[in-house]
Image (cartoon, rainbow, N blue to C red; front, side):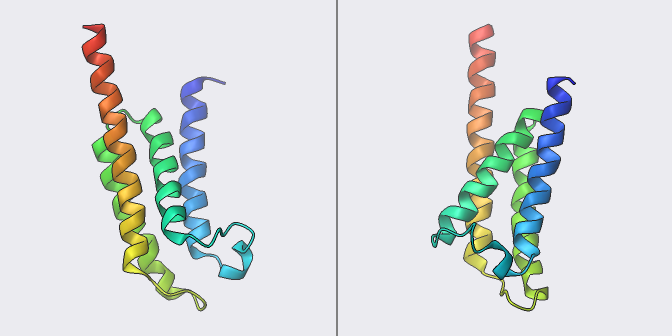
Length: 116
Protein backbone atom coordinates (compact mmCIF):
# COMPACT_ATOMS: atom_id res chain seq x y z
CA UNK A 1 0.00 0.00 0.00
CA UNK A 2 1.53 3.31 -1.05
CA UNK A 3 1.30 6.65 0.70
CA UNK A 4 -0.56 8.13 -2.29
CA UNK A 5 -3.23 5.45 -2.10
CA UNK A 6 -3.55 5.95 1.65
CA UNK A 7 -4.01 9.72 1.33
CA UNK A 8 -6.60 9.22 -1.44
CA UNK A 9 -8.50 6.78 0.75
CA UNK A 10 -8.37 9.17 3.72
CA UNK A 11 -9.63 11.98 1.48
CA UNK A 12 -12.63 9.95 0.36
CA UNK A 13 -13.34 8.84 3.92
CA UNK A 14 -13.08 12.42 5.20
CA UNK A 15 -15.49 13.88 2.65
CA UNK A 16 -17.86 10.96 3.21
CA UNK A 17 -17.80 11.49 6.97
CA UNK A 18 -18.56 15.18 6.48
CA UNK A 19 -21.58 14.29 4.36
CA UNK A 20 -22.78 11.67 6.83
CA UNK A 21 -22.34 13.97 9.84
CA UNK A 22 -24.23 16.73 8.03
CA UNK A 23 -27.18 14.68 6.87
CA UNK A 24 -27.95 12.00 9.48
CA UNK A 25 -30.50 12.78 12.21
CA UNK A 26 -29.05 15.00 14.92
CA UNK A 27 -29.85 12.43 17.64
CA UNK A 28 -27.28 10.06 16.14
CA UNK A 29 -24.44 12.52 16.68
CA UNK A 30 -25.02 13.80 20.20
CA UNK A 31 -21.76 12.20 21.35
CA UNK A 32 -19.89 14.16 18.67
CA UNK A 33 -21.25 17.60 19.54
CA UNK A 34 -19.23 19.97 21.69
CA UNK A 35 -21.78 22.78 21.90
CA UNK A 36 -19.59 25.11 19.83
CA UNK A 37 -20.96 24.53 16.33
CA UNK A 38 -18.86 27.30 14.75
CA UNK A 39 -15.62 25.63 15.85
CA UNK A 40 -16.96 22.21 14.81
CA UNK A 41 -17.71 23.41 11.28
CA UNK A 42 -14.37 25.22 10.97
CA UNK A 43 -12.25 22.32 12.27
CA UNK A 44 -14.09 19.65 10.28
CA UNK A 45 -13.59 21.42 6.96
CA UNK A 46 -10.06 22.53 7.87
CA UNK A 47 -9.05 18.92 8.61
CA UNK A 48 -10.68 17.42 5.53
CA UNK A 49 -9.30 20.13 3.23
CA UNK A 50 -5.82 19.58 4.64
CA UNK A 51 -6.05 15.85 3.97
CA UNK A 52 -7.40 16.33 0.45
CA UNK A 53 -4.63 18.85 -0.29
CA UNK A 54 -2.08 16.13 0.47
CA UNK A 55 -3.52 14.11 -2.39
CA UNK A 56 -4.26 16.89 -4.85
CA UNK A 57 -1.50 19.53 -4.85
CA UNK A 58 -3.82 22.30 -6.12
CA UNK A 59 -5.01 23.80 -2.85
CA UNK A 60 -7.15 26.58 -4.29
CA UNK A 61 -9.09 24.14 -6.45
CA UNK A 62 -9.57 21.83 -3.47
CA UNK A 63 -10.46 24.72 -1.17
CA UNK A 64 -12.98 26.15 -3.63
CA UNK A 65 -14.60 22.78 -4.15
CA UNK A 66 -14.87 22.11 -0.43
CA UNK A 67 -16.23 25.61 0.16
CA UNK A 68 -19.01 24.73 -2.28
CA UNK A 69 -19.48 21.39 -0.51
CA UNK A 70 -19.89 23.26 2.81
CA UNK A 71 -22.68 25.37 1.34
CA UNK A 72 -24.29 22.37 -0.38
CA UNK A 73 -24.29 20.21 2.75
CA UNK A 74 -25.70 23.03 4.83
CA UNK A 75 -28.46 23.56 2.28
CA UNK A 76 -29.25 19.85 2.14
CA UNK A 77 -29.89 19.92 5.88
CA UNK A 78 -33.20 21.55 4.97
CA UNK A 79 -34.30 18.18 3.57
CA UNK A 80 -33.78 16.36 6.88
CA UNK A 81 -36.73 16.50 9.28
CA UNK A 82 -34.85 17.49 12.44
CA UNK A 83 -32.32 19.99 11.08
CA UNK A 84 -32.47 23.45 9.60
CA UNK A 85 -29.91 25.03 7.28
CA UNK A 86 -27.81 27.77 8.82
CA UNK A 87 -26.01 30.33 6.70
CA UNK A 88 -23.31 30.85 9.34
CA UNK A 89 -22.68 27.09 9.43
CA UNK A 90 -21.93 27.21 5.72
CA UNK A 91 -19.73 30.29 6.20
CA UNK A 92 -17.70 28.68 9.01
CA UNK A 93 -17.23 25.50 6.95
CA UNK A 94 -16.12 27.56 3.96
CA UNK A 95 -13.73 29.60 6.11
CA UNK A 96 -12.19 26.37 7.43
CA UNK A 97 -11.69 25.07 3.90
CA UNK A 98 -10.24 28.40 2.75
CA UNK A 99 -7.85 28.59 5.73
CA UNK A 100 -6.53 25.10 5.04
CA UNK A 101 -6.12 25.87 1.33
CA UNK A 102 -4.23 29.09 2.05
CA UNK A 103 -1.99 27.40 4.60
CA UNK A 104 -1.24 24.55 2.18
CA UNK A 105 -0.42 27.01 -0.61
CA UNK A 106 1.90 28.84 1.77
CA UNK A 107 3.75 25.60 2.57
CA UNK A 108 3.99 24.66 -1.12
CA UNK A 109 5.43 28.08 -2.02
CA UNK A 110 7.90 27.97 0.89
CA UNK A 111 9.09 24.52 -0.12
CA UNK A 112 9.56 25.65 -3.74
CA UNK A 113 11.57 28.69 -2.70
CA UNK A 114 13.72 26.66 -0.36
CA UNK A 115 14.50 23.97 -2.94
CA UNK A 116 15.38 26.57 -5.53
